[in-house]
Amino acid sequence: MRKFSIAALALVLLAVAPTFAASGDATLQAVPRPFVPTTASLGILMTTVSIGQSDQPPLPCWDCVLGASIYDLGIAEPLAVVPQGSSMTVTMTWDNLSYTGVGLFAYAIRSSLTAAPIQAAVQSADIFPSGWWGRFIITVPSTPGAYLLQGSVTYGSAVTSITAPLIIE
Image 1 (cartoon, rainbow, N blue to C red):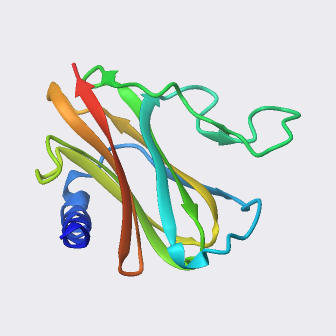
Image 2: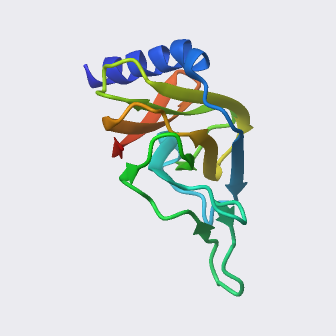
């Protein structure tokens, strides 16, 4: 039943998202994996979705910390409450363990897991095993209330997604 729900969510998001596309642009970046996992059949695992202020210099960014001994990701402070009509950045991260091909990364703001999104966008890209982040610069909808912020990656016939609470004031 869970697989059916995820597949249905992906289908709805892909069918409806272009109608609700947000203003702004989408960006996708990758960084090589530090090692090749032995469980390579896992595909892609979504790790985070967040919304924060659109900062200058633009965030997120890879290797923002000079001299760090590991790859790092700089993101705007993740917020749970955002003002309506403001410019924000939706950031998603995922770990691609084994998939090579076209992937669709998307976000949606919706009132419940089954409700149609009040705002959504999707972007396609060629992806490969690596650590990834995707970013959408958006204008927050002018509809105050409690919502869910969802991030997802569709690859082949599979979908990985994650959800965070969001309040629009």
